[in-house]
Length: 119
Image 1 (cartoon, rainbow, N blue to C red):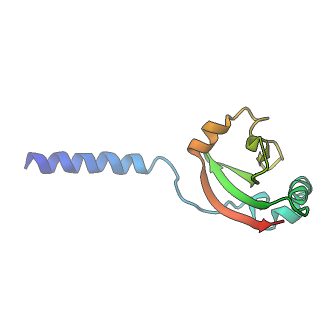
Image 2 (cartoon, rainbow, N blue to C red):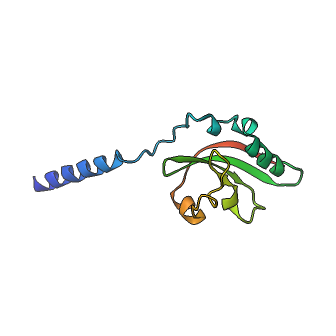
Image 3 (cartoon, rainbow, N blue to C red):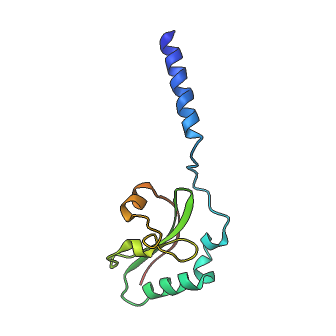
């Protein structure tokens, strides 16, 4: 009987902790982070266009969530500083926002791939 009470107590504690953080992969309602954001945001369109030139290689534009904030990241194998290509809605990179790349990558969740191609 004591084991069942302990188990029930642990389950209750774990279920309470699970409710404190949103771990859903729900898409944001902000139009900045929708699939058409690449065409709608001039700063993002310019960055993506630079990676779509011939012989630029693969490109993925990814929607991330980090500490309940959304970011758009551009992944390309030729980039030596990937933190420079992860942006908030205003076009500020995580470097500019003083978010460490390793910390960001350790805690980030991928929500959706907005664009994937080879150029």
